[in-house]
Each structure stands twice: as structure tokens, then as C-alpha cells.
Length: 317
Image (cartoon, rainbow, N blue to C red; front, side, top):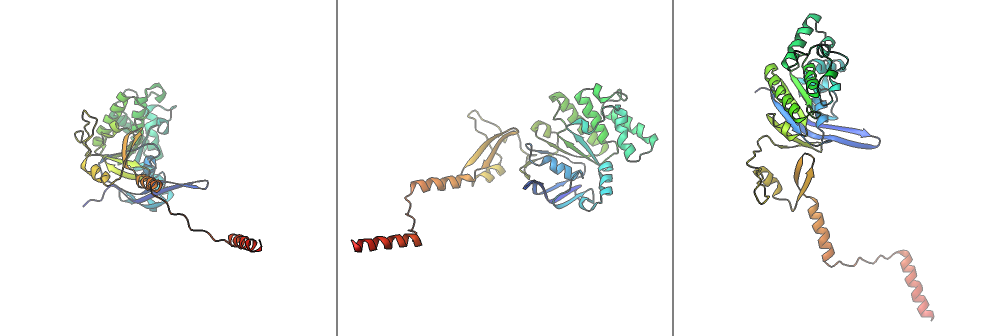
């Protein structure tokens, strides 16, 4: 059986800020097959970008194992890791300035990664033209990104990410700075490029609509991978006229033993979770209702001396 393209085992990432330690990833297991398109959704600070940085070789885990395309990333030397980032993985960021140099033309932006990778000059321009045509900008080869729209800038950024023909594409909120129509066009483009160049795509986002373009959708919250939302159907989550919602079976099973269910309104939607504080609240309420035993008298040395003094005083009087 073929090994998954991405294998992460018990990945932990902790940061130390002054005297405080922040755990961004809490021992997650993650696998991804070659050619798959996976979206990870979650709120800001959930650990999405941290996971992307580990897989992209931009950071190293505090603990755990990580294999990408047969490479053990934790065993690579700095020069090997730099070559991995340059040739085997492409990055698309929400902030296009992380992909683009605005004083260079679209064509020269795409040829730059190839120059850094040592691609011969006579191969750079044809490859850059091919990619810019693939993203729909074949007529704007010599234009600077500043003269283009946000959607066009992100298209150039995608072409830059694919310049060295990497098998893995990592996208960090690639549509976060775009309007809905431009976002839809960029996502359709990613789907087309994935098929054309046989890409494995991992995207992190907080947008549920954007995540629907992926084959598989996972949730990441508080540094831990949670529910697989891929097979959640609209019928299962239909809202009736009374405002009641039918939850999937696995969700009902998870919540069935909870003494109380907490409902939170989050930026990405509505969260239902077992309220573990319910037991403590119930215990506290019972403590207030039930009669309490008086605490045992504490016989300190001072109290014994005080009582003895009182007894002697009574005898004298």
C-alpha cells in the first residue's frame, strides 16, 4: 500500500514568550495522500498556520515526527531544508507581498524562484509564460503587480508558487483579502491547476464556503484536530420551522453523555460542546442547599492557654 504523501505523528509545537509557554499544536496526527486537496478550517489562533509552517519546512516541531514525500523533515540539514522549500513546496499567502516583488513585472516575478533554484536562463521565460497563461494572465506578462487588481495579483502569486514545479502547494487564507467573486475565481483556478500539474494541495481558511472546494475538510481548534466535516450533508443539518436542527449521529453520540451542552457564537459559526463546568456548578448548588457540618474545633496552643487561664480565674473568684 502506498505511503501517504504527508505523515505527521504526535506533532507538538510550543512557543516560549518571556516566562510563559504557549502550545500551538497539541500532539496532532495528520495524513494526506498525493493528489489530495485538503482544507483545514478554524478560527484565528487555532494553530492552522503553525501546521502549515511545519509542513512547509518554515518551522520545526517541538516534538513528533513529520515525513513529506518520503523525506524526514526533522533529519534534514539547513541546506537540505532550504532546497526542500525552494523546489518541493510552493506557498500562496493571503498577503501577496509575501509572494511578489512589486517593482518587477509579472514575468520577472515568476522567473525569480527559478533563478534561485539554478534553472538555466533559456528555460525560465518559457516556463513563466506557460504559468502566467495557465492563470489567465498571458496578456499581462510585462505589467507590474501594482497596476493589477487584487485577484490578478493573487494569480501571479500562484504562478510564482508553482515556478519550480513543486508537488505540494500550501495555501494560507489565499482568498482572505479578495471579494467573493474574485475568491471564487481563484478557487476554481486552484482546482484546474491541481489537475493540470498533479498537485497535492493543503489550504487553511476560516471560510466555510471556500473550504467546500476541497476533497476533505478538517477542523482545527485550540491546537487539536477535531471533526472531519467532509461528509456532513445539508440534509443532516437542516433547520426546521421551530428552529430545531438535526445533528449527525456522531455528533449526537459525542454530546449524549454531557450533563449540559454549551452553545457559543464564533466568527466561523455556532459551536456546540459538552459543558464540563456543569458538574462543578451542580455540586456548588448542592453545597448551598444541603446542611453543612460544623468544622472541627481547632485546639491551638494559644486557645488551650486561654481556656486554662479562664478556669484559674474562676477558681480564684
